[in-house]
Amino acid sequence: MKKTEITFGTDGFRGIIAKEFTFDTVERIIKAISLYLRNLKSNKNTVIIGYDPRFMAKDFAIFSAELMKTYGFNIILSSKVVPTPIVAYCAKYYPNSIGAIMLTASHNPKEYQGIKFIPNYGGPATKKITDEILKYADKEISVKNEGNISIQNLEDDYIKHLENIIDFKLIAKKQPKIIYDGLFSSSIGYFDKILEKNNIKFESFNMYHSSDFGGGLPEPKEKYMKNKKTGYIVIANDGDADRYGVLDEDGNYVSPNIILALLLKYLKIDKKIQGKMIKTVGVSKLVEIVAEKTNTEIITTPVGFKWLSEAMRNNETILAGEDSGGLSSGNHIPEKDGIYANLLILEMMSYKNKSLKELVNEINDFAGIKFYTDRIDVKLENDIQAEKLKEKFNEFNFIADYKIIDKNFIDGTKITLEDNLSSLLIRKSGTEPLYRFYIESNDTDKLNKIKVFIKQNAL
Image (cartoon, rainbow, N blue to C red; front, side):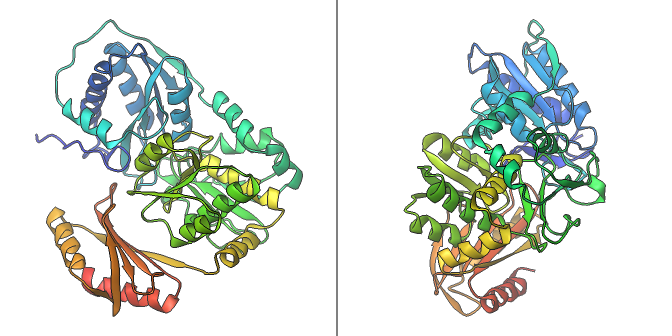
């Protein structure tokens, strides 16, 4: 039988359970990670292992723990389903930690599972690290004196840390009207526990772990956040709680682009926090405008939080974020954290004493412009089709009769059109067999014309 090719996308290895993602594949990945860790020649020897609510995630986690134990590592295995950001926090701050393993496919459909390695800086593994791990794939590894496995709850220190960086007293005083939609995700038993511990009232729905995420996708988007109520914001997380989603008091989805702009202004102007804004190439021009108006330097990276994490570790950071719903800040871990993101939104609303809807209107007024975004996904049959699409769009001088004035290739192709306000980012997904077209404009007619152009030339 042909072995599954092991590749690392924007955030670890992912595959369909019982097809690409099997115990054999996990064993090969764990062996490679173990060889990589051995060759670090570190005096640290503890690996934290966590898992999301997906089918057999716990079984894969126990299997991984038993393997690494035989290779001489001491294992701290989560006693229950746990969010990725908590595992990342433990990877950074637990004594003797050399890194962590997380069994998760994040926001992918229920049939997927994944595995990611988190180094002991508490963020996604860099490409350099994953390339090094791949060098050890399918190489022999000797059994060492066995380590041990300790089963523990992982959240206590993480929660204490959040209580040092989030103003829970202010949120409790203002009591914004909150609906927490658990979305059957790993944040259940954590986000609600944090709110209850700090006397913050909320209503909740979908508050149990489900391997099929209630029949939907584990993605905090309006389509799946159905429990709306006038006057209440709705907040949720994806499957492993490293992404966030929020609906305003009228039930409208507030895009991560707008949230990043709001939080940048809040942290810089109101909280007086200094540093750089670090964003991926797909983030809205709105954030660039707010950064310019707040005199904040911007660093732009390829798509994927591993690039943001690397930049965070090398720069004083106000905020780091991506348009897909991942963010963190300089006083937190260099890993995207949907729990922290939702708490920061609640703190901002409480500090400003305004609804999210009001704040969204304010940020558009502050920027002097309103942007509209959309995305078209094209399913790929193979890499040849992807390359042909890339070449075809790279040859265009006009998109929907609008002249192209700039192209950059930080990640895929980012095309800026003649008004300098409309753009198109074209890139291959790092987690799914898709080619993604991200569209932005300050004009809905232009946006729709660009969409038509893409459909005519890509579908």
